[in-house]
Image 1 (cartoon, rainbow, N blue to C red):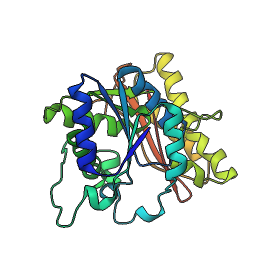
Image 2 (image 1 turned 45 degrees about the vertical axis):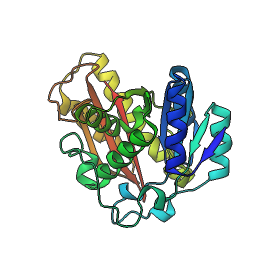
Image 3 (image 1 turned 60 degrees about the horizontal axis):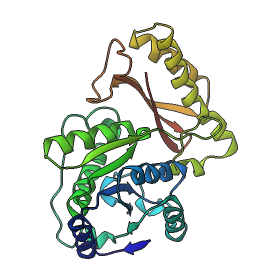
Image 4 (image 1 turned 180 degrees about the horizontal axis):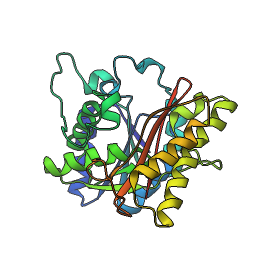
Length: 280
């Protein structure tokens, strides 16, 4: 497995691989890898000849009240996990390499990014789309793999790819959960035992909505009311949003269309912010 820090070296290697007719798969991460990330790497390996994993804590997607310095950085452990999962190349640029002095160009998506996360984190998706566009330009992957856990991110990047005519296929990997149902995420490590028990109410609320839809319920307000009731039984849980939206546009849906609708939940568990979703 190769490790590359330079944009120029990454571009050169990617061009060399393409010249040999090899398909490139990309998995973008901010490090602190867990089993969810590793499943995306394995999925990319099924579709591509060479898999590139980016490890880059992107300061542009952190809001003013979010401390990028506190994001976990575990480079050596992450490199070992990448190798075990089948990555061929790990791209670990510095902030200065991606955003050199005087940098002032950003990519924005002004529709899909606005609701849900866009309300409470208004600058977040500008950072997400900018780094995605830069990585797509640097590496020019044939396929990029993202996780369903970040449903809005998937929708935003898919829209950006279509709007800007990127020649990359977006592949979506399923959400990987722990045995208690909690979706795997970097913030889970910040939960105490008690907080984690309370956090599982998010999964319980999503499962309740899914079972109601399976039983024939289609009214979104009833589904959201039941999910909110479940969450509100836990004193450490503060709901940021619980909504049923179109999984492609993120627009609210009054009536559930099975397979098209997704319930998205964001909540604080004391001071830990978690997101999760369920396709209905």
